[in-house]
Image 1 (cartoon, rainbow, N blue to C red):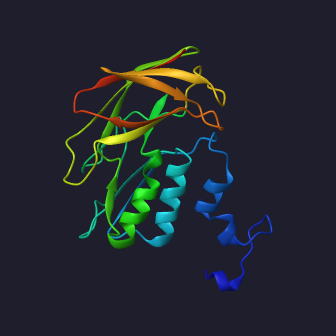
Image 2 (image 1 turned 180 degrees about the vertical axis):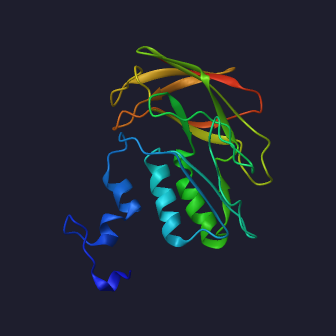
Length: 212
């Protein structure tokens, strides 16, 4: 249909407003869990850019491949899937701690996409679900990256999501370690813990976040 037709959903709202994913993400609190979203294509449509940026800003998981000569047909993420193409082998569960990458890349990406409307995002970052420790006082998970294409940054932000026992309140401060690196991090106003500017290597390394 067309927006000009004024079609209504059963809520009485415009269908276009009701199904506007960018609006839904922006309106929801960052603490609300969203699914891992994977996207692919040739050039990033303007509306899709805004959706991706909204997801990143709220610390939600996004992976995408938009390439000048077209990206892959799918960006499949599964621990056991049988897709014949390139499968990203990750065990993603609603009830298991997972890291989300690139929360604070939005401003840089918006500038880059203004002149170069194709990019890859978070495709090369990995984690090991079997390594998860999820306790009231401590969260652990092994993270790493695969070899990066030219121009892709090895530095990212890591937001902890879907923890079942490790819960943070706004303003609480935690200690984090990643190999030989360490520091302190404070939960934001939504109770999310995001470690900024972390350089990942190709060797799986345990990220540990604990109460101070």
